[in-house]
Length: 347
Image (cartoon, rainbow, N blue to C red):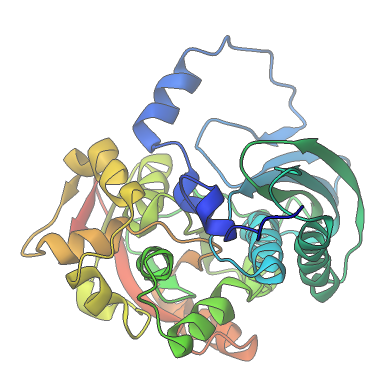
């Protein structure tokens, strides 16, 4: 390759979980799929848009299986690999599972970027898996137009500890484990408007494994979990509300937010995915007094975002303590679950 390598983010039309197909479009696609027989051992499938499939092996063990991949959210190859792998593993943690191993999903424009760059992406992913205590046991590669990397992640969970996104109950409190604003940071990065300090903060949050998941799942007061990714906090809270047959209220003032996120959103650093998210589910959200910038924050696509936990009021302290012991200093209660039918209220 004689020409200088392009920036990784220049090779993708969207970065990180902002690449997701919009919720409304995805729902329309899945609606057209033929219904197939569901064996009793399949504890979690597609019915509530949960984070992973879960298949029971015996009374004490169930396999957790998921896949996640996307185009570059950052230009550093190692950081891209670490973020993508951390994001994929999060779906296992969100079910209360413990990862066992991973398979790499690799699509690279081999005529545009060097084998050294590709190797650094894969090494970044392997480093994230090493931090999770698991191997990358194989995978598949293709030559593609855009750079794509991710994992198939396989884990185990005791069926008694399995946490779906559909178990929330009226009266529950909601705790969020990571700050919001990754989408705004990535949009600013692509335009050269993100400071070095803010970049470091983005890498720190997107490469932090959601390791509290299994411990949280064993707490008796925890009823439901999911992770906040490409559909934004509003979208994933709505999935929890709809699956649980409840409504959710979010306290806007309580939300943990990356330091520069609100300023960057105010300056126009908003991803296209944010608008697509709102177009897909905005009719089910009562914004209250929230303005356009708050709406952009609620729909901001999070890459490798935090766990959203629904628990009894009595369990809030234990949940937040668990997050803090795992290094999630910004974990905080952000809302409540109330009677309703799959809607979201912002206060």
